[in-house]
Length: 158
Image 1 (tube, rainbow, N blue to C red):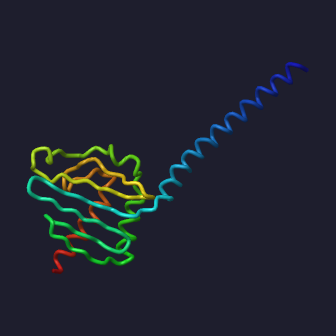
Image 2 (image 1 turned 180 degrees about the vertical axis):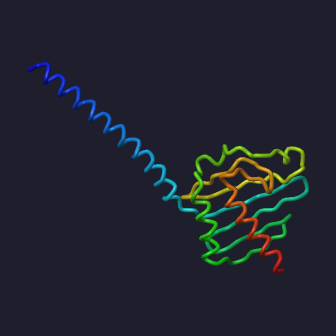
Image 3 (image 1 turned 120 degrees about the horizontal axis):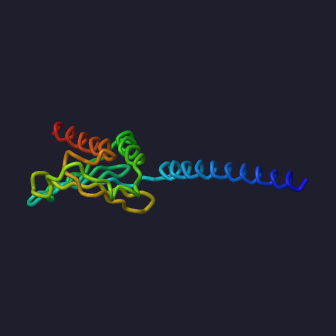
């Protein structure tokens, strides 16, 4: 009888532990997903510079400010434009953008503009690692292209 009771306790303990481990793994995945979904994007800034040239594009929910070598242009943006760039920014794991590796190194010798993204979410600024203009880390590529594409479209209409 004692052996049966001991075996029953061992089986019960093993089953409970396995169930808890599975639940904890599910909770971790859910927590990461929820953290990305709870990001409230407040501002997105792209800066590109080299010796003698500096450009920044700053998006907020209602405006876009472009500063090219101290020539500032402010423009209102539509809610759909903000929605597009903020959703793209919201898909990025902001806690990791500072360590994303750049695929190229032309900025080290002025062959390319040195670029970075600064995303403000829930009152905290997240700054990406530096990358070559036109060659962002793949995790930032969609957001970068949306910002640059939007800027080129506006420049052609002037």
